[in-house]
Length: 405
Image (cartoon, rainbow, N blue to C red; front, side, top):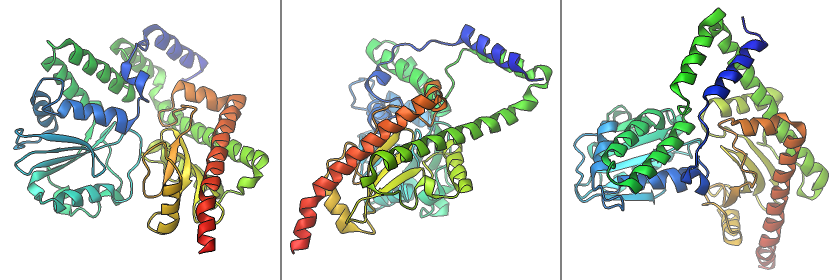
């Protein structure tokens, strides 16, 4: 039967066998979940047959074997990052192409895979020569809206695959290590990246630690309580995150009333059950599932907003399709820290560097401690106010010009 001693024993086992974190150049230079500037770039570097790794097409061929792609011509290969917004794009002179969509924690953009598929089709590639690889930590399926415009025949073929870092990429990297055995710089780079992937996929613990933990769960019918613990854990996560959102909004209301009241579609504007279901989906699935807090940007259709993906982001929200003039005004007036998209003409990550999606101990410590949580809420609210000031000041001249005309 579970009691306090059970958790104390888990703590003792973990302390005894936990692998200490070692120096890792990837996490020193970038966030460990940075899809574009870390993972996609490194994958592209290995897959590039003309790359500085000097291993020719060996890494690419090993990748194709691991993924189960046959008949792909490895001659005259070109590999791109952000080709028509495709994370990694591989093509050859035989008019064959591989679309690799890379997802660590982020959700799918509207019709994302369908748009990439159509881009490649318009360039003259035939279905039999197109492969779409949807890469996530655990091999999850994309959101239905992302691929539903791709015809069913293609989606049911071997040219459409969901692959994982946990299995496919880790096994491929292990083979790359073998290939690069006599190239120390390349070998060590791959080894450090493999360590990072093991951490992200939760497979970085020692076998001895996992064996002891498994045996402990098999004792005294402890396995029967695991599901209840999982449910209680999720409910705690939901409670803590909603407390943070309320802390942020309270700070904005009390310290920056000039910003105005939050608008509809904000997480706190929903009824309690909808709030909880949105946050629950955030932790159980990929994507942010509507975890946003919006405030109006006067005289425009835009909003100042905070969005939660893996990390918190803050910026200016405006739908390009619905209000193109407002979007263009904001796009031209504001400098975005990160690459703008069709609904965020300007945005960037908050400076706190708190990662929510993986529920790291550091994140839990902040959310559980009321003073630390409120300190985090304050820092996010201050950044929101900074964006509000920048946006209102930047668009004033343009708005006056419109009034004059």
